[in-house]
Image (cartoon, rainbow, N blue to C red; front, top):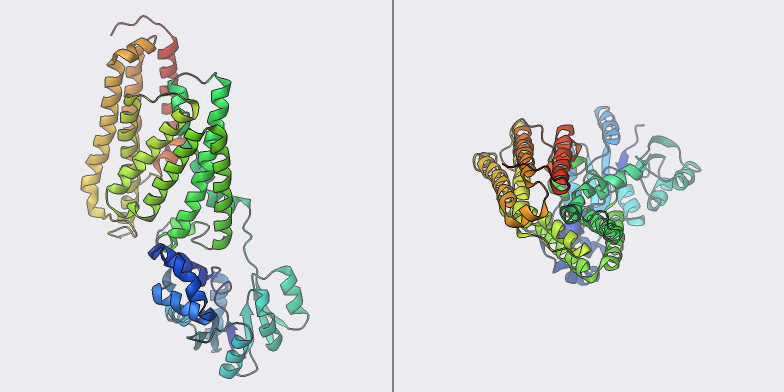
Length: 478
């Protein structure tokens, strides 16, 4: 226990891979860097890491760490034990981690022309602390170092690797990893967000064609295509926005931000989901496939660039919601009315502003003044409140004009009943804004509205009244 304790970084002290994270940041900084990667690789591993580090850095204060291992290191440090960080990561990353944690007596890392991995790491450890040390690692690549150590600390190692190490080296401590089960992957895919794609069914509902089996099957396939495509974009967006998510009080717990899922696994699953989405979209129609491509282009532009600009982001969100309705129309070959499009734009603009206001209210409660990665400040609430409420009321006004339109009078048996829907809209939208002002709003109002009992009851009541207005001739004269 008095021997120096040498600790690995990637996969051990932190469950993430800092090189892969750096690569994501390099591409995020400039997609043209993808073309430079092969030339950097030609410089060797050390040269490659040096080139990446020259482009971007990793914020050590935002990295996820294995807290049980950190607690153990702090205990050993308090006893006077020498703690050494030895990693194949670039020295700029290792130095940042060491400075942030304040635990390490020495730092051994990759320098220019010298990649500290495998035998090179073992040699550097022996030169620094001698031949008597304890090594904490996580992968099979660490086995040669463990075999040269006097004891091992196993961190999230596979059963096969653990058995290999235990055959020749005493075990000082073991820190098992957390299994990433199905529930974690479902969170990463954001399956709950698939509920947003129910908007695809709006044209089927407003055209009262829900008894047409062919159209219904097309809508189900379209829903699945949009859902898998959305999951792929959500995962890529989470990887794109890792550092900002880690600075957020809730988003830092997401599967990739917390490193419960490996980045490379996430990219592979996202690619598979996108491939499946394209196949389903082609099955529906060529026109729907093009709508899905347009959605992907717009949502990528939003995720990579537009979400950083104040108000542009909420306008884009409202368009993306409205695009789902248009895609549903294309899927079943039914034209979308201008009334529905105008109503949707105002409605979803209000909901997008609810989302931003909810985030700012949450920031205000924690004492922060501005969002990270978005151009919003708490002081903007004085403008965003009336803008959001005004958009909600504009949606109600459009709906009122729709009720009085000649085409509505001809399509509905009792169009006067639709005024009850207008009252329901006023209540529902006002309820969302009241919940937001109280700090009770989920950061996604569409999901909140689906989960909230009062919202669900109101929406179901409005749908029931709309169906009654279409099918029942009550002879009302208002």
